[in-house]
Length: 355
Ligand code: ADP
Ligand code: MG
Image (cartoon, rainbow, N blue to C red; front, top):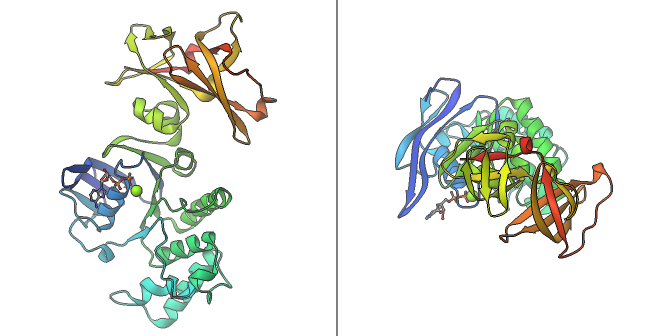
């Protein structure tokens, strides 16, 4: 994999903890000045990967090259990499100002005092905390703490910042606002962010590109649009939480399932056979409505109101639950009767098949 002075390159990273292989040969090149989301289910190796890049863990195999420099055997604080932890890891007995200044003051060769003052003040302004410099960490809100954690990392001017679920501890409202702020701050500084998230919505909304990790290996690395429209395999489609993934077998032009042969538009080569149709590409019609496109007979189970959309859950003959998303922008919320029979319909060209 090409490594140059202007990118961050991981080559064949393996990390084992006893019998567990947390990272199973990860190779990846991040460009300078890009926002990369790292998405994967719990236990897929996201934190392990960040810790290996940062230098908190030594890989069993592979190399980490940051802007042309092999840092695999370098101590964490010598790598020029920033880390923002999920729990913020701030110093509770220090003020906002002191927390932000900490990395500079305690550097191997600290900058002169007036430069520390200038950089800390500027960074506190950049993250919107001016006026709170003297507060204790216990006297500010969760969102403000998140900003201190970010400022404390940014002030040391790393060119790569690793963020491990940095919004996970915030409530939903604040999380939305911090998403925009993170993107803006990163753009202004021109640094590379590698942002771990367990939320597919966050990964797709924030990343210029998204890495999908599955059991310690990269399943896909592409733009949000490509991942959304062409997930590399059925597992990626499942992680996106936007696709019904039906099991069966590809036989020529049809995908054979327990509820008949389903037509499809696009085929994605994969060792696992599966059929994917997005939650928002499905119409619900009555049991006796005329046939159209692809059809699956189902029974209505339940619905869930999400504010801007409603999710409907239907059960197919084999017990598989299919989800249908209705955006409320499309009109008022339809109501279905519990345990009544319906048909789900979609256009073959909206469906993808893996096999
Ligand atoms: P994620 O951040 O995606 O949830 P992790 O990188 O934390 O995943 O974990 C990947 C795998 O490695 C999991 O099976 C986890 O149990 C294991 N693991 C992580 N850290 C350790 C450790 N310090 N000791 C033993 N096993 C670990
Ligand atoms: Mg983790």
